[in-house]
Image (cartoon, rainbow, N blue to C red; front, side, top):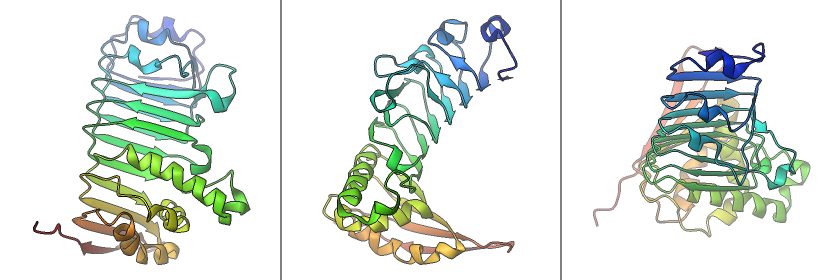
Length: 264
């Protein structure tokens, strides 16, 4: 069921519905949503919504059966300074989470069963991430644009700040077995490689890295091999797959490198 802002009484519309899947667009949602008969909801998609979610309120704890959550361009409902607001997400049953260009600067996710995590964000607009995902398998990350650094991205202090944000994010993904990055993320990583190389690899179980890029960014794929190996020498990767999208051509060129774990 999809609901937009054309409904003046959202809860009155769906109160008597026994829903498994719900998509909301352009609505303001307070913490009363979870008490409106959505105990069986398994899939929730919120697009361009304002949420009553802050550091004192785990908004999504109201959905005990939720397995799939998608948040797209949502923002806090309260008037607190945006730098002070924390988006907290937890769910004992949650297995898939997609965050796409959220307004929050601080994100905390605690989910014991989460298998898939996708994040699209501006690195410069993401101050902190705290992730506890012990069952994590597959991750897709796109956080390459550093909008608040602008032309000063080349400055060492700004690059070090960006590195710390990447490190914090990657540390929360330690249990991932498969990681997909886009060319923007690879470009950002290449600018801070001297900071990352000093850090131990945060990935304890990573077996596959997939890098996707447009054809004009192919040079960034060439350096991906050495970047992965240099980032904390302990990273043991089974395969690195770089997929290049050819514009106006109905085909794709895929380069694969195999890295096998040492016998010991």
